[in-house]
Length: 165
Image (cartoon, rainbow, N blue to C red; front, side, top):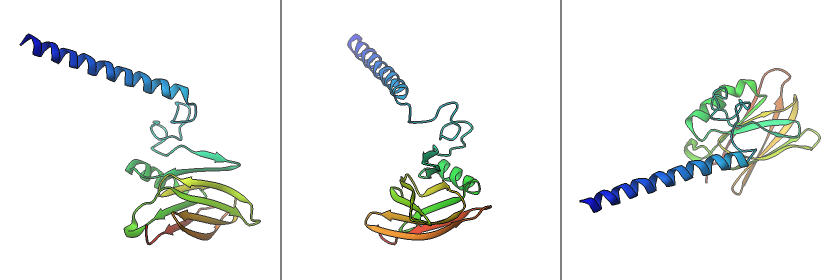
């Protein structure tokens, strides 16, 4: 009986130690990286009270963008934010399956690349200046191209669908 109690206590102590080390290691990893996750001053990241679940906004040149929507909270946040972004893109596959890892390249009317990235989910929101653009989207081995015009007021949308995965 004493042996069983000793084993149970030792197992509990070991589990508590492992848990504590894991939590401490996670906190250290967050401190060591300045680019992952949100901060209290970054209200655009998922997990922040003011962010509403919107994924972190990224910057490439003078173009801001965010993508995601794999989880329900992110999907709702991205759909709710569409009216605040000049361009919204959606990527789906067979049976309206949501796709991620879609390579996106946006080119302006003069052929200059303004955005070259990979979507982290089925929705991408992009802040572009008014004008004409071409959106190139590639999923696996299949490429699609769509022209879009960003109005001075209002928004534009483009939906990309791949019939096979």
